[in-house]
Image: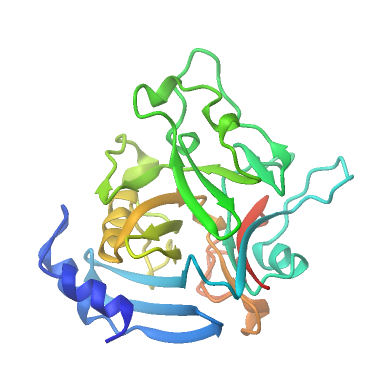
Length: 297
């Protein structure tokens, strides 16, 4: 039995706030598996006929052990060191330039002018700092972060007491690679309560990262804004990630940004169906500011 099927089998009887039928639908879903690098597996499922959350879904997963000594985890930016002009570049292009064999889009960014909305540090170099509005609560997507220290990938959070006013918490994260993002979805195996708003409650394409209870890293995309795949609310995404065995999980930028790249695949390596062109194809990538990637050693 493969690892993903094993997780779904163990969890099939637990609803976690969703209908039990969703657990059964996941268990019955046909997944394809392909090894794309030593110890790295690409998994894909297209749930049709409305069987998951009463909708069609198209889900991709990159899965590897955190202790995989054959690869390196990292972030990469659309910007070029020494160039003061900020850029937005497609995920697949950033990944190829950075020498990655796989990547997903990163955190939220400024559509006009480029650059991340939230703190990004790569190789010890600070590229962006989190933008706060004085006197206003910190937005949920500024209350969590992914940090990388060698092979140690961690999902971290703002102080649990009064996270809405924890200004500057991310600047104290002691790691050479930091990407602030959110909302935080799962913490120590429990779903994190989310504020009620359209961003959290409506269905959109989604990208997420999680660390499982058995110390695997999963990078996940769910397509949306199409009859073939309607996307997920963040509540549905959190449920899905718990079904995958995630112990800690965080949302990344989604919508038209949601992209998964795998070296050597057709369509410039884009394996999902990015929605920015409003078509069901691999050509709808949105230029972004940064990516979460894997490189061979």
